[in-house]
Each structure stands twice: as C-alpha cells, then as structure tokens.
Amino acid sequence: MTAAPQTARTLATPFTINTVEIPNRLVMTPMGSDLANPDGTVGPRLLKYWLERAEGGCGLLISEVTRINDEHGPGTPNQLSVTRDELVPQLAEAIEAVHARGTKIFLQLQHPGNQGHSAAQ
Ligand SMILES: Cc1cc2nc3c(=O)[nH]c(=O)nc-3n(C[C@H](O)[C@H](O)[C@H](O)COP(=O)(O)O)c2cc1C
Image 1: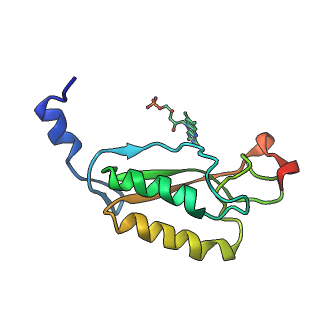
Image 2 (image 1 turned 180 degrees about the vertical axis):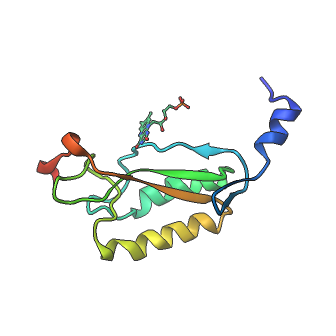
C-alpha cells in the first residue's frame, strides 16, 4: 500500500519538542536491543544499529532503557549505561555521529526496580 500524498507530506514535516527541532515525524520508539557492550558503553553493534536507522531517515531515535544505577544491576545484560562519568565521552561521540546524519536522539533513562539483574553486574 502506498502512502497518500498528504500523509507523506506530513511525515516529512519538522516539529519541535521544547527547543529540539526534529526534522521529520519518523520516530524510532525505544527498544531494548541488548547490543551495547557489557560495561554499558555504546560499542560498535549498538552504534551500527543507531546509524543505520539515522541513515534510513528517522528524524528522532529514542534509545533503549539506559541504566542510571549500578547498585541494583542492569535491566538487561548488555544495557546502555550512564552511571559513571567515564561512560560519557564515548556516548557523546556516538550521539555526535547520529547528529551528523541529521537525526536527533533522546536517551530513555531507567531504574529497573524489581526487574534488575543484580547477578549480571
Ligand atoms: C524488543 C522490544 C524492546 C522494547 N524495549 C523498550 C524499551 O526499552 N523502552 C520502552 O519504553 N519501550 C520498549 N518497547 C516498546 C516499544 O518502544 C513500542 O512502544 C512498542 O513496541 C509498541 O509500538 P507500536 O505501538 O508501534 O507497535 C520495546 C518493544 C520491543 C518489541
């Protein structure tokens, strides 16, 4: 089925969320990919996943659940993490690579609560 012309035009229209301008309405919802490195850094597999979607035309990527707490363990074994300062430069580099393709990216932050896998730390 082909999209009606009006739908296609709407999809191509930019919109803003607060101060962030999203270039079109194709948004990748957050999906736990299990593709980050075990230490919580982005790593080549998750970066490739993000860049393929940015190059495919998504205006906004929303990361998978990203952990904010090491004490209670990750929510999934290879979960993206922002729990330590040393994780930030590599994440910033990956985000710059997404931005360089004209795509915005949001991080979805997560505390796993009673779903934490503390044995996987
Ligand atoms: C494999 C998989 C992982 C997902 N991981 C997350 C997640 O990390 N965070 C979240 O808020 N939603 C997650 N979701 C939900 C999706 O973002 C989305 O809301 C859901 O698939 C329904 O989308 P739909 O209404 O377009 O079908 C996940 C879905 C799938 C299939």
